[in-house]
Length: 357
Figure 1 (cartoon, rainbow, N blue to C red):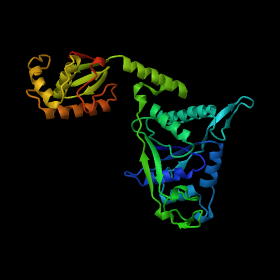
Figure 2 (tube, helix red, strand yellow):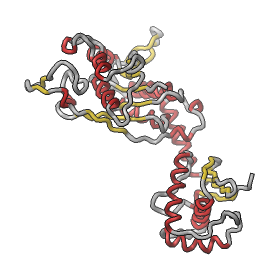
Figure 3 (cartoon, one colour):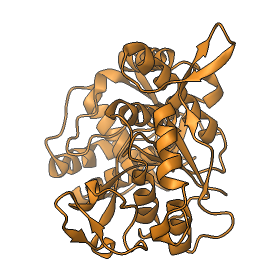
Figure 4 (cartoon, rainbow, N blue to C red):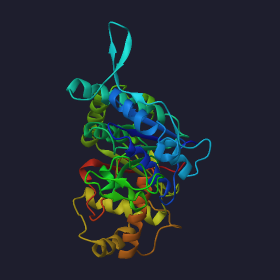
């Protein structure tokens, strides 16, 4: 299994060496196998000049070599691939011309499609974890990478931003803490030891919308069309009822056909609250719900006698709802239980019991 670090970069590719350092020093540490740069023509030149040119201060090593040495990278770790250049088709030559920069709406659309395809290429392989860095490049590049990971990223993928303390975040020649070569001098001539730099990684939360599709191959290829497809699908989800089926003997319930495992007591609590919601009788809190449910249980003949709970306490309801939320999240179900309310959006729920199988 090879982890890939995918980074958008511009005029300051040192953002990538800082990110790698922070990953390696994290808890737990993570050292990518391969590093993929998404950049423009100007950005590719900066990568070559700043990361892959031997430096006298580093004893003839490049900044990338010095980083690998400092982190004791193995032969199959921190392998920097050739930069992926964002480009447009040249109708005259029949080739792809790399963009020098991203400054127009057309160039932004080109970059969006290019970044989406790079994320798709990586996430198509289930054995390739992705760490995507939005720290470098123009702000639009970072925003597009965040959007692409949200659209087709997986729960196991990561989206990160790197934080560097002053003055190192803007100090020319700084690549990672403790780098060789001695102190670095700022514009005022003051020296700063790289050993005192603090580099930290911030994980950026994202919602993996790809769970709404059965297969990544079903998703449209273009960025704009994929956004339109998601918008249409989410609108349809909001307008149609959710079908919830409960199977006591199977110790499971289904949300639009998606199975979610749960114990009989949890199923009874869910069944009761959905029934009350559907009738417009929403309990104010767990104590009221527990008291009302005691009467409901006496007539709940659909619950098998051998497993029907005898009593229900407010703590039972609180605990089981928490477990149900976790189970729904794990199953990536389209319907979720509110965190601090017993109102379950009854107008969007159809409830029925599922026969034994």
